[in-house]
Image (cartoon, rainbow, N blue to C red; front, side):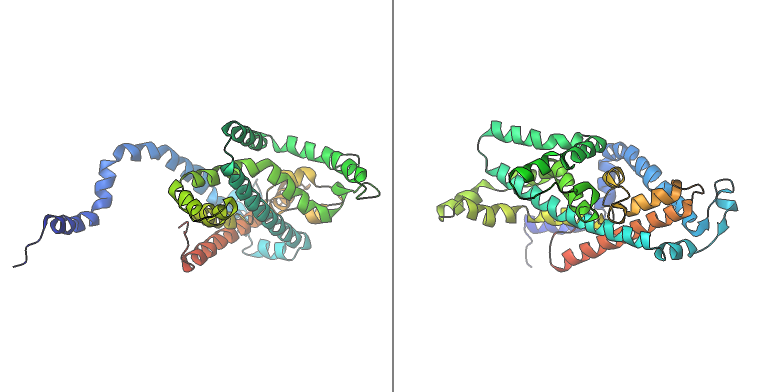
Length: 322
């Protein structure tokens, strides 16, 4: 008879324990479960509870009639939306600004995090982190006001371009729709780049220092250590954040576009959120159902993009969100 050692017995005994481990863990951590109840209720109440309002996307909703008395139109609101040029333009603008924000925001955050990770002077490093974090806490109204002053015809940017003789006359940044997407990208990067570096810096601090030492012994320079140690070390973090950002591609923002829009830039500035607001509240006869239908379309597409991105990452054997 083969004698089973203590290690083998322990492993064998662990198998049935794993099958009922979920409920045992649930009972053993009941304090944590109670602490999570308020947040669970918050999510259910404010994130899932309002979903019943999606019914208005299939109605000609009138507040005086309510959900029960409003006329049912089925897919008529969606047919109306996709038959309008301004809604199709809002989809184009949303995707364009989202992609610009995604590329610029991700690249700038990784570059700044890598540079800060290479700084050895802690006082200078903390100063740069504090300065780059601060714009995140500014109101978008203040940020847009600053941007309008900086990019105006007599603003700092035009004065710099004129002094360097790169242009012969001031550039009308705020009045040309072709510049609007890029202005939004620049403003978002300036406001959020410091905040976005937090996760990447945290991921870099978890990299084993012995990897840098081994690379230095092998003759790798600082740039080579960044390429072969630092960037691979934050790869999993980058993939998870990328999947999450792809899921938000239909959310290019609302405040900055609404505050900076004008009659000259409407075809480039209006996103799906701006379209929903204008159709829901911006006319003498509000069409709430159109706004709800536009928001519902945005949410469903975002979920589909998130699932596709997660499945693609799983197929490539990368870290996934789900």
